[in-house]
Image (cartoon, rainbow, N blue to C red):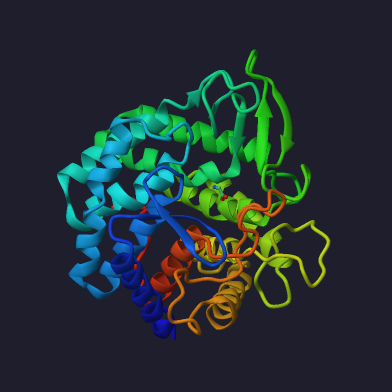
Length: 374
Ligand code: GLY
């Protein structure tokens, strides 16, 4: 059923590889990715898509293309280029860890472990969290964590499996617990970010960066939470993470728009011009796939989650994909990056493309992403 969408996606990945050799996509401007160097938080998604394409069809074109980026990712780590943030997990899980998983490459494994150490250096023990952005003494961001970070934790869980060193596991576990305590609200909604006092570690307040307002629920943050807590449960078997992921999922599903794809924030006033975030729906679909695998067969939420997954993925394929645009660079229309900041409020998002393809190949062939233990 999903085959046509996968084949169209894989053809577009090839088109981009041929058109922009050695380059990496950045945030979009007018339905085109900006193609540049490895210096943002999102480059891993492009390489991750090449690995998914290779795993799906075994065409060595994609494997060779993905492998050609490893040196570049390693040099970025060595030079600490634009790595003053926590998204080292996104960057290196989908490039180096993926390469190691698919090919067993030692060089990829070493790079991925180096990345895990770089991420570990962002641990702030006084606050019990991995700092999201900026240097440790940053006055605004020094005490700030964000819900997106849950997707960076699998790199640490993986490093623990590889080395047996407990520091990776302990920090990932503590950060997940802190996220659960301060980012998830009682009704199953979430804060995008949370601040602590850097002088004494005290919890201060929830807030947002990309959402509508501080107390609102940014839909992509909620989607990161669904998938992130499900993965935290996969690695730790700490039951409360599964429960949290399910609560976040129910909140998300109950507030999906008529067509089963979300707007950019659950609390934003809706009119005909309100942007969607198709990338949030793609991430949530991956989270639901993960939950459906982890939860009991007789779990009362199973039917709700299965229906939501099928409705969302069908809507993405039929109404949001670029299957009608053979020359498009992106796979999913109507993602939003930063609506209030007027940065790509309605465009392709490379992570939307990645998670859309991840969900499709998992639905069609049971291929997983690169967040899992081997
Ligand atoms: N992790 C940043 C974002 O989702 O925009």
